Image (tube, rainbow, N blue to C red):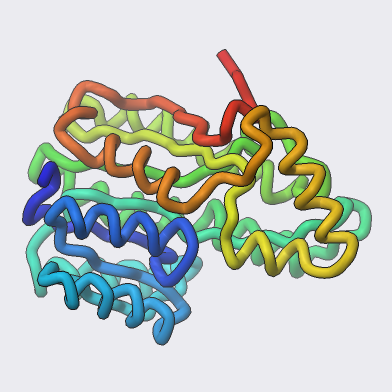
Length: 253
């Protein structure tokens, strides 16, 4: 078990990709702290982990609020000690043409997808620097690498996560902290089904599937595999990197 007894904080671990990440890293022996606004669903993820004999903790947290993030990190630290691995996974989107979107949607998308990870990194990296060790892994999106119709602000946030992570990787390298990014392509999650509901949504899913060379959507566990690599000692000399897990949808140099 490559991350045995490591303290791992996963945001948005209640379902989808986040849940798969929690289960995979717990299977690798990590102690899993789940920060999520969906507390009841997060408790189900935690129960699955504890049923296997591993440790899990749920802290209801709105990651867009710095004070809640700070309180979450403090609770984890008091319970298990300093955080070894931070996984910025929580995300939200609404698919619609940019000119039909409204400022309240922009604010929500930016708050969850960009401000949230910034809040987490600022809080967690401070304790990692003191210990001169730690790993930060952020879930971006191939939408942030090549753009995606109907996801202008979301794409901007995910591109921002890539630039932010590369800069953080440079700044934290001397403290022996790695910072990397995983970019999923279209992945079969509850959120995807939610934002592509109805007849129009079905056409979007069909178009997404056709665009992937493997002609299928990704599965949450396949994203979790990439996160497990970055969290493990196998990636101790890997930082500032962006890994697409998208069935060949994007092949960016």
